Image (tube, rainbow, N blue to C red; front, top):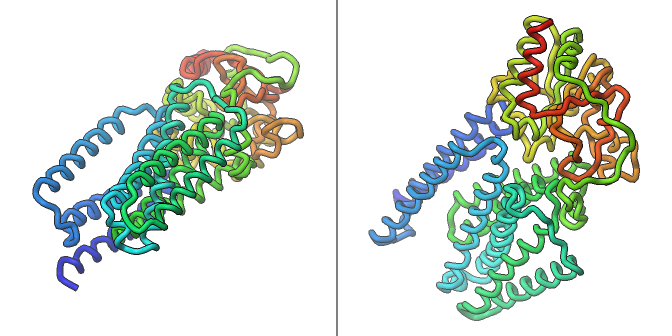
Length: 465
């Protein structure tokens, strides 16, 4: 082994360690920021070392193209990362994840078009084909997920015989993949048809899925992208790609299962049941009348409470109300000695950790933020609960109504608090399209209005007491 080969392998090992450390630290809101930095350093090291990999033998012009691509991509990512709103973070994750899957598929296509994948034997060629398939599905599927979350696709379309169409396209794609593997040399026509069908399958698979399930779908495609990258790492003989892809694939798979369990759904149910396909349309539900109050009345109730549990949701992010909410909470704690805690559901918002990041952005201490398992037992003893922008994750129908589509889904037991106040813009359903029985409860009062304005009014109400 030459000095350069040893240096590259050692650098890849260090990069892999940094990836794992970074991913581990991303598992907690307290250390997530440093985890991103550690993983970023590992990626920078792997990228720089790859440019000097002895096996590349690239000419000057190719180096210029690679560096130019890195500069353009890096600058674009830096700009969009700085400008993106918290409400659009899930869309950005879906878009960037799709780019990763597309890049992995592109690597496989280049290797197959050039014939290099065929020269390395059946095993490597098989991995290239699988990587191209998974990467293509992840690319097109992630773009559909982005379009749904961004509001570019406001209507979910389910074709007649949808599952039969999906199965047929999948079967034909697999057959073409086998034909490519069985061919003696370069098969450009087969490769082209194979890739186009993999893109079509990603679209067909994702399009019928309702918006309520998009966070799970995004996480699943993240796992797909990781696996595609790992497979292409074997094709290129690149250890860094193998390790990074495997880590991302494993993390994405675990996160997907965690989110599915958080909704009491199986992955097959998410992919094929079409739950929430109306994306927030009005649905049948409990009968009765929502009882509304003004923000001042809610503020007075909170001021005379000993304990308050706040449940933030996507509506809080849309209104950018986290800073005003934290100002209100600080007034409650300092001037009225109220014990305030925040409760976070595993699938709150549009992606895991969405609410944690939102609250951290406002300066809420981590020790005030609790997961469902930690906080649920405290609701029966809480004097009051405040729900801001959350809907499906606090719907008691998940516990009591066996006919409800969300029956069995773990929820935050908000309805068990002595008093419940819900901040909501209107009387519509949640992202799943299921009406919320909590809003009609005897101990529930609705505070209608924009979350940011309501939080401002709550703070002003405390000043008048």
